Length: 323
Image 1 (tube, rainbow, N blue to C red):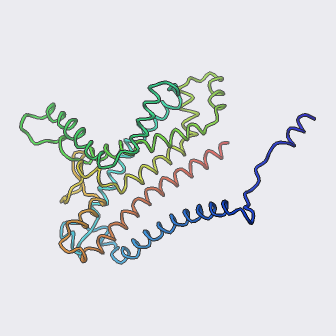
Image 2: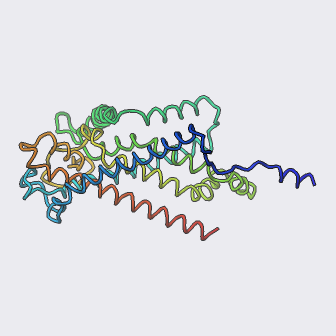
Image 3: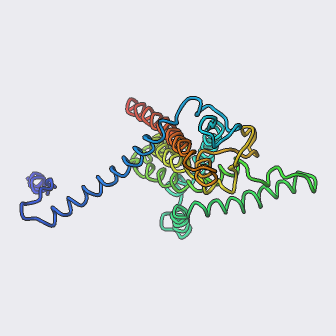
């Protein structure tokens, strides 16, 4: 009887329906809808503008063409070297940022004492890292990776007075700089995925005799994999169009060949958009190339995101079939 009475008196949340004279709720509801529609409208205007001006200049010759003839000529310009360079540095960045971000999130969520001073300092550092302007990351990459790490490697392995191999802008340093910039996205997304796993799974695994590491490796990480991929998608989305971090660390104005080694510079779609916008001898004439390059950059970013989303959906289906 007591149980039935307590169940019958449990408060339930009724759907929100503002009354006819509840003007405050009507204004609040209208403002939230307006803000949502404003975001959708702005996105539609931006994408519509790029598609309208970029589609006429988009062609197979433009996408697969090189920039060795004249990068400012509408009839001769191509973006294939920039496409290769952008895809390569995003791929390298993903290889660096995912392992480091996941390991850091596992430590913070599974091993670290949540009220310890060191844990609070690490969480504060991650939060502050997310708010640092991207140009600051570029200057950090120039000072730390190129001048300090690269210069030290050259001093250690090369004869004195020889041309620098590591102590110069390269796709390796640009990718590492982007990895540090996007690290907070992966850490936060992975931590949220780890927190969403039911504690009972960990307790059952430990009760059956598994060690902490085995529980994390065989129970926690597979369950958190879709959330980890979400962090990777966010990192790729942000890094794909960034220019400031690679401005000092690896992007080249023009290169006659593709990057063949980690110490080579590379051409980049985002940096090429900057060049077309600021270095063109005739801005009106190169505007179709500019819009078409932006459209290619968006398509590349969307393609990388779609691949990651499909992988995440497939993993989720496999997990549902197992359960």
